[in-house]
Length: 197
Image (cartoon, rainbow, N blue to C red; front, side):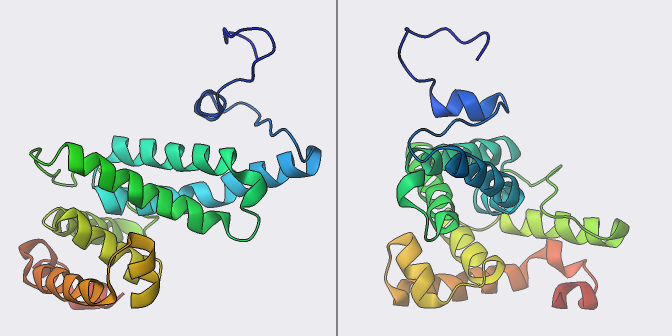
């Protein structure tokens, strides 16, 4: 790799490789593993970024969380053949939890300028922005539960396992989050057919 200073005989840090968008080099399993990882990154990056955006509510931190998760997958690629996306998704959620534990006193973003998904037309964009604004009123745990339960379509048990909390906590957190979303003035402006989607 050009422009990367490192000691002779050492391997480049995976984050540097992914950050520059260079070709990913995976040692050990050869060319098949290298191609498989590249295909994995290309196929899951958009979905992982949407999850990160919804969980954290900040575009730049979502990009960082996604990149950190892909670096973690890269480091453990040889052992993650069964379900590397689950590992990446959990990495995103755990990294966000670690971040907010350190920065609890900061204010949540208002969701302005975040494009959470590919949407159809102006109505879809307005609905996505309304959802972003409504999600910003949730706590970090409530966001994580809503994203895993409804975007990722996980069961209560799977969500509890993913977040390392009890199933009862998932149920109560989901109920509290949905109550907040129902009462959210941002979502009240969205047409009823848009809300059903």
